[in-house]
Image (cartoon, rainbow, N blue to C red; front, side, top):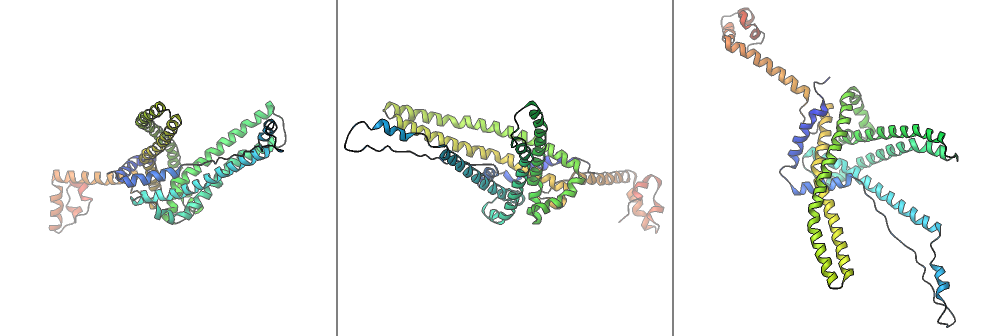
Length: 389
């Protein structure tokens, strides 16, 4: 059993590695890390559309009387059309989310490769790690669907039978919600360990997801206390980092909003005074869009140190658990302890020799033709246990 907890010892290694990568500031490196941070998250979009019926203008040469009957053509679309539009929007959102998540899975490997090599690039690692990223994406998708089925199938079985809502049914939902909570917790732990430990294993040893899990599982099971403490520490660290990033982003949003508000207000009042109210609102809308875009970029740049530190922290713990997978160059607690013991022994042995003349007696021993052990005096017995070179 190690002499210290890896979850605590890895903090200093992660800090040193983060400073070594981000300092001195390299603008290109920070921007590439910001782009990676964007795709590691989530995204989506929705199209817009409409359907209008233009009334026809009457027959038979008469000029009047047509509008009231034609207004009936402007009735609301039928429910089938609305359902088709909503379904199309949902399908597009799901497809875009899947594509975004797939890119994010590949970016996991791009990030780890950059942290390992201390040289962050995107295009070449993205091409090299595309298929491992697809395997990671498929694994994440299966785990997510499995956790949803744990709750979805019982709910479908209950409500699909047409059972009316009653207090007994509500009582039955309580264990289902507990089961869903447990499933969500287990799936989040599995996905978290996959991102933190399995992805570096896949990258280093050219393995698949399941093969990497088989590679790591004996160590995680043997070091279950270290693993459990890491999971808890990572959760607490994630909350602390999220709060810190949120506060910095909020402060940045307030600072960035000042010039946009001044320029927008001046343009709006100027165009309003000139009678061009529509132009004023258009300019305000453009400035608001630019403000949101700048805020997104600032937020991503602020996340770079946090993202780098958290990932280096995970890599440091992995290097302590499995020395063959050390991508950071960590100082393991047990190695520090062993080095300290050797140093103390050497210092302790040298101290009495220097103070009592033990080294001189040991050197004189071989010159007399006798063994060091026979010639060593009683006060310098500790020095006699060490071979004389």
